[in-house]
Length: 135
Image (cartoon, rainbow, N blue to C red; front, side, top):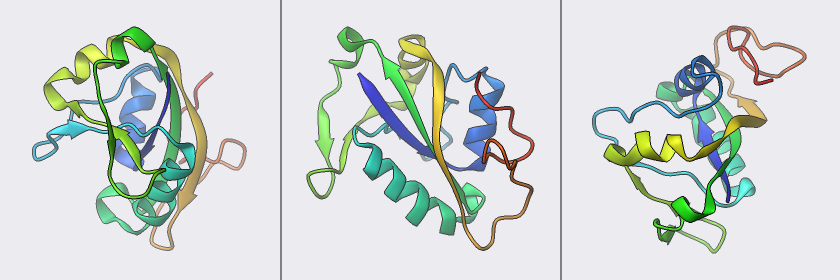
């Protein structure tokens, strides 16, 4: 199954450090990992929320990745707004196992930067300058 994940700069750096193969553990206060099923929804979050959020570094990147169908079928689709606002809710304690069922690499689809973003953006990849792009 193709899934999408909007991430901020800190999470993006951790994913890049994993070799674009895994998502980092959830932080305290983040009980679920929520990949989304619709790329437009991921873009909406990255562009409209992450770019205005200090904790996201005032930037949002949309990632795409595949997860083995048989594994991901255990998670019910959650609709959290309009029809396109569909997510999977993966309990934080299951994220390690979820990562083992990702078919790498995690791909970059789009990056967005808010007015308050601080840092360099690579002109070729569109990623923050200190993030090594996926191969």
